[in-house]
Every structure is written in structure tokens, then in C-alpha cells.
Amino acid sequence: MKATKLNLAVGLAAYASLLAGSALAQDTSNVVGYEKLSFESGFNYLGQRLVGSGNISTTVTNVAGTTVTLAADSGLAGDRSIFEVSSGTANGTVTGSSVTGATVTTDDDLSAELANGDSVTVREIATLASVFGAANEAGLSAGFFGPGGADQILLPDGSGGFTQYYYDDFDGWHLNNGGTNPGVDPATIEMVYTDGFLINGNAAGCVTITGDVKTGDTAYALTAQFNPLSSIYPAGATLETSFGATNDAGLDAGFFGPGGADQILVPVTGGFEQYYYDDFDGWHLNNGGTNPGVDPTTVALPSGILIQNVGAAQNVTVTAPDFYANL
Image 1 (tube, rainbow, N blue to C red):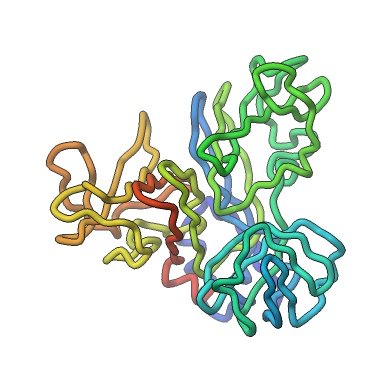
Image 2 (image 1 turned 30 degrees about the horizontal axis):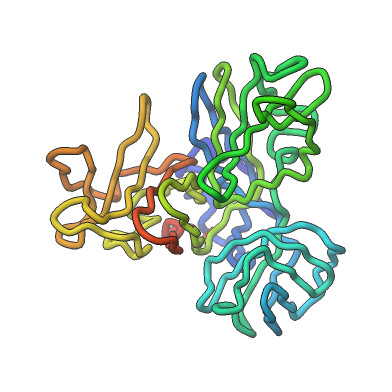
């Protein structure tokens, strides 16, 4: 079936007309298109909610450490790719990988959970070049002989910090290290779609994300404290659809209060609204005082969110809105 293209910015109503007769390929829908993410001057928390095209969906025939053998040849020759698992104990896992033929070398060792027969997908991985353009086709505010006046792109470094990049109209993309600011090849700077990213805007602007709509589960790998994340699902995502009315995602919960609970930070004008799950009586707004209960179906998730993981590193699995199963 020919894929359907649409502007995802029009929201949930556009999807409703597509519910009948769409075909699924693993955990990616037959809907492709684009989403426009606006940003303002200052810090903006954003996320890729569309994913790269799938090179192959198949099953696993062998797992040995970080080496995974597929049941079919990917047609790739050492390409950096996203490796997704869509069944079994490792369902929802997303990691970077290098893929040659039927052999995948994953960035993370999945051998404790990944098993023969599990369904997997190898797909294109986004980069600074594919998202913003090798020559800044996104139209970001640029510097000239330095970062002054340039929008800054902050990508999580996996250790609780960020690596910062900007575009220079004189000679292209640069790492902003506060000193020498060396040039970089934007095609080698990967942006895994589970991670959020920040734009420190010099002025208001907009970036367009293109790709496929994911319909399956996604596992967040939470490190200690603050984790910038994509909300993954580009229309209809709420606190309830993603994390479950009763915390099906498995976040650390409080009991009669926010103590010990992981916090979900939703960006709003001027700051964040902060939510947590209480094992006594459900979802709450953490306002530092009365912490009122909330209906999680009414809390919409923007493209980028943060989770404050108060305990040890853990995986939590989020889900798509129910109607995605029919896309």
C-alpha cells in the first residue's frame, strides 16, 4: 500500500480519517509526513516524534553479546542505524547500531533480554544533517566566524550533560566548546529519536521533522536524575496514553505524596508543570504544596519532556494512543 503523507501539525483530526484500511509493518504505521516544531528565544525542549524509514523488519536468529544475527539480509554495508525490538522481553528497546548484511552490532548489550525469534526493525538514524540540513536548510539563526547570534542545538551526551552545536554561515556546522569551536560533519552527529533535544534560540523559529509514525511501544533508558526525552507519538499523546492510567510504564511512585516518585516535567510557558504517580490515589500535579490529583487523560504531552529519575537507572516503557493500532 502506498504510504499516506500528511502534515502532522493539523493534529488528531487528520488521523481519524486514516483509521480504515491502513497496513502495519512491525511497529511503524503506513502514515508518513512532517511535524513543525516551533521554538522561541531562549531554551526550548523538543523531540523527534517521527522516525526514519525502516530498512528491514525481520526476526533474530542469534544473539552473542552486542552481535545480533538477523533472519534476513538488511542490504546495508556497515551503516549506522536504529535497532528496535518489537516483541519479547526486550519489546520497545531502541539503540544505535552498525549493520552489515544480516549482522547487527548494537551499541548496548541486549543479550540478557533479546532472544531468538524476537521481532526487530532496522531503520535510518537521524543526524544533525538530516534534521537541520547539512547547509542549515532548516533556517536556524547562524553565526559568522563564531557562535555569536546563532541558535544552539543541545544534544544529550548520555552522562547527564549536553553537547552543543551551531551553524556558521562562513564554514558550516561547529561544536560549541566555549573555545576552539571545531568544525564537525553533521552527518556523523546522531540524534536517536527517544532522546529529546534543546534549542537555545537566538530568536523565534521553526524546525520541520519528517518521517514515519511509530505505533509500537518504546522503552526509555533512564539514567540518574534529569532525562530529556521525546514524547514519541505525534498526535494524541497524554500522560494516560503514554504512561498508563495506573502507571503501567513502571515509574517509581510516591505514596501519600511525591517522596520517592519519579517526576514527569512538561514544558509550559515560563517553566514546567511537574507530575508524579501516587500508589495511593493516582496521578498528581506536584505544585510543592497541595499536590492536587489530575485526570491523566487531560494532560497533553508536547514533543519534548523531561523525566527526573530519582532512583537507580531503569527502563520504563511508554505506549502509543490506542487508535494508532489502526493506522
